[in-house]
Amino acid sequence: MKRSTLAAAAVLAAAATPAAAQTAKAADGGWQFELTPYLWAPALKGSVQINNAPKAKLDLSAWDMIQMLDFSAAGRFEARNGRWTGFADVFYAKVSDGGDGEITLRRGRGIEFDANLKMKQVIGELGGAYRVVEGSTPVDLMLGGRYNSIDMDAKVEATGQGPLGLSRSRTASYKKDWWDPYVGVRAQIPVADKWSLLAYGDVGGFQGGSHTWQLIGGVGYAYSQSVSFKLGYRYYHVNHDRGSLDYDMNQRGVTAGVSFRF
Image (cartoon, rainbow, N blue to C red; front, side, top):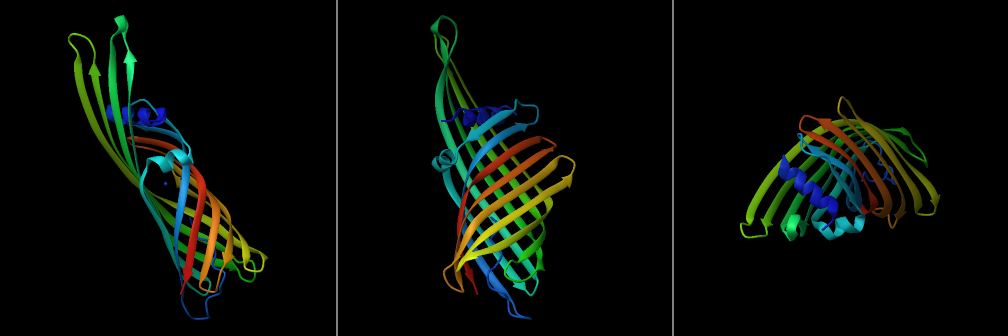
């Protein structure tokens, strides 16, 4: 069990890819739809503080997260007509970790402990885009709202050694969700036949105690007019310090998806 996971469990017991711009142009006056299931394997680094509990530091690699992963699903849907596009995007991940250890006290006595942490995260986006530049290198301006949800459950059990001994168990749950507005821009740059570079960036929050920003870069390959493959790197930062939660986190990692147009 990672030390950062144990710290997060102890603190809780004490008290989250936009798809690339479309390569095909929608017919005048007609609709074009794009569905993109994708994978995102982010590393996690930052801190979490709940109420007045000590702040827990998290530093987990992408491989750590994959090992802890119970389930994940992500996808994006876009509907475009002329220069206008509506979109919805959702990323969901459920992770869990557990382990045990021992704290040595005086005279050789100690306390054995076992900690388990489960966490669910949702990052959702809903909004629209307007194509300000047409042609071979299209550029879209984005406006939307981003939904963040953090749901944690922790359990810590401690057993003391010695004649008297002790046995303690404590569980705790915490859930917080919120919306942040954001604005962004995305572009597609053709570099070769069927190949293009993808670029995206946004900034959000614009309100006291909640700020986000995101960068995505990658490459796309148009296998056919209706199917394309995308590979990139996504960096997402959120700093939410409101009410009972102080959540300052960076998530970064490789993304891969397949787009279907119809």
